[in-house]
Length: 372
Image (cartoon, rainbow, N blue to C red; front, top):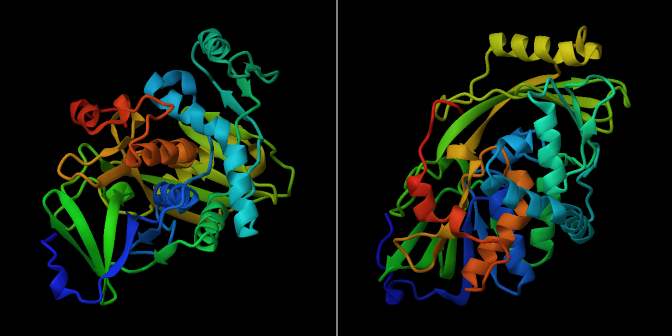
């Protein structure tokens, strides 16, 4: 439970005030890295290894799947981030000395309902798109990029540390102390550190209270199962998508197939029936997979939110607690823009993007439907 800190009880209290980020996935590390770049002292805590949850488990597509099917609230944030991605990841790679395999490989969306309407939407939004030669119901989106997400989080973690950030991984044993609507300090490893602002970036767990800080509304885990294959490099050079299923090629020949949407709580169990379904459906799109055996089958937990709209705002119960959660399927996609938006809110600056749709109040009004 958060409790009042009496400084006399902690004579070793560090006087430097930190931006404390709880959660070392892409949502947490991207905010932490942005605040470091703005000259702040930043500490990140995670109960597991950095990026080991949904950031690691996903496919790394850097765009909303079939963007014409999403509300402007999603596409505005996503497109703002997509325009920043190439420069953002380049800085991370320079600072870390590591490659994340950012690749503008394009995507073919197959069996599109009303392709004419979709193409008109793309034209209106300035999204390059055309009918694919393979089918009059297939749309080619040449500017869609991907990143090899496990490598991205490794590079982002390294860049954060190289820039002077403090990271406590696999460390769930810490306490927060509050007084008069402020979180004042964090105690970790028998040391107390003063907290200037606290950022909650707790992913699929954001819908649960943390140490006396109330939960973020309408966030819940949504499981997704994935398969990994190894094919010859060049077998597939663009993303394929059809009716909720995607196939993502890596430059070394590895191919990812996913993903399901399952309301299964915090259960990351996989099952053989789903593996067969994913394999069979993927082989229909890419026959080269027909006789291939998956190298790996896993599940991750997305930070689900109604309509895929994240919550990026100040926590209403505290003056110095902020949240960056609920990106659902698009945490990687939205990372640069979400981090910039939240950093502006923390520094009481006017963001370039209207923050109203991502506010706590807006999140309270949204409701889940039967469609995940």
